[in-house]
Image (cartoon, rainbow, N blue to C red; front, side):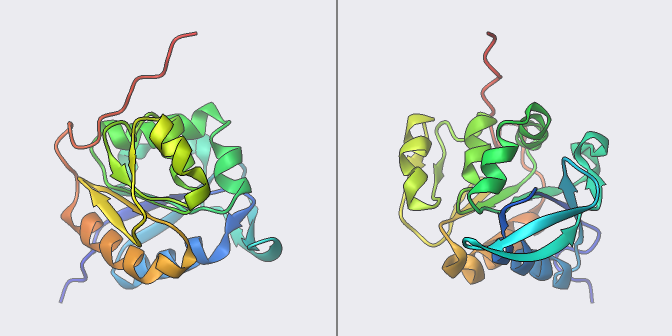
Length: 195
């Protein structure tokens, strides 16, 4: 019997400072559902997980960001933590990687502070989503509708607030990732502003 994500390849974009439970538990759920999962990171080698403000485990990066092509993946997972998405949103290559998933209509799941990357990539305008409550103003300022719910799905975009939401987040993420790509208008990205 085929698993829900049989033959799907999911990218997890992360760097040092990710909230460990928000990478580890969704990754395990994706693998149990049959997906191939690859951690994409700006640097080769290991990245540091966190348990809130305490260091957690080290995780191996599978693919360096500059060698990763969104065309090679079916979906994207953005774990939170404070430092992880804050670092990634300042890297043009990471922002472009996320934006490409949106432009291709591929499903994206983001939890906690992960939506910071969606904001930077121009993917929240007109979308309904949730996040860590402290960044709700950022979501609204970027044109998104922020709601306080454990999991929100808006046409291929799955979001949750914090580690307590992971069971609901995982279930919805697997359901949406199994459904596959959307029409190109599924997630409309705002093109980067010219400065």
